[in-house]
Image (cartoon, rainbow, N blue to C red; front, side, top):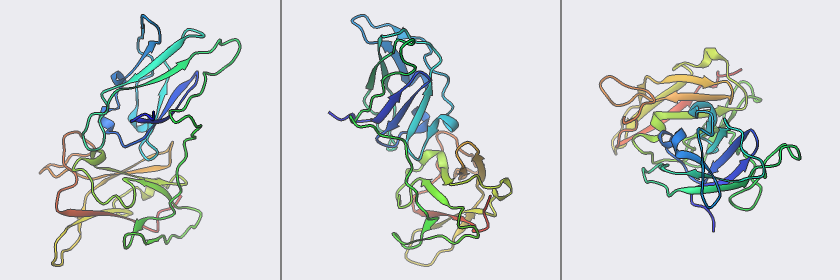
Length: 258
C-alpha cells in the first residue's frame, strides 16, 4: 500500500533524503518530528539522531525533498525505523504518522545503507525545467531575456497555482534559476511584487515592498511578501500575506543576469 506522505526515500551512512508526496508546512518540519528507534520487540530510541534541521538549506520546497544528516553512528547490521509524525499539510490538516524501515550495514563490508523507496521504484530527486517567468494568459508562457543561457527553472508556489492559503509558505515565493543571479539584481527594482483587487471594474496594480534574498547553494531567489499588518512582518508565523479578494504577481526584470 502506498504511503500517504512519503513518496520516496533514500537512507545512506551520511544522510536520509525524504521526498514528500504533498506540500508540507515548513513550520512543522522540526527535529522532534523525526525520531529513530531500533526495530525490535523492545524498541530503543536513538537520542538526537540527526543534525539540527536548517530549513533554508535542508529542505527543497520545489521538489518537496528533505535532507536529514546523521549525527549518530548506528549499530552495525541492525534494523531501525524512522518515525515521522506531527507534520501538517498546506491546508493545515495533520498528516498521519509514517515509518521508514532500513537495516544498517556491516561497515567493514559496505560503505552505505541499503537504499529503499516508498514506491518500490528508485526515484531520483529531479526538477522539471520550466523555461518561463509567468503565465500571460493561463497556459501561455513567454520569456524575454538578454542572456538565453540564463533562465528560470521553477517556482514555488508553482506557476498555475491560482489559489493560495493566506499564510502560504509564510509569504515566501521561491524562484530558482539555472545559475546564481548577481547580487546587484536582488532588489525590488528587478523583482517587483504587485497585487490588485479581483473585481469587475478596472483596478490598478499596487506595488508591495518585498524583501529579496538568495540561497547561493541552490541558485534560488527568495521573494518575501510583507504581511498585511500595519507594521509588516516577513517570513513569520501566524501572519496573513495573501489577502482574500486580491490577485498577486511577480514581475522578474529581463535585466536580471549572472
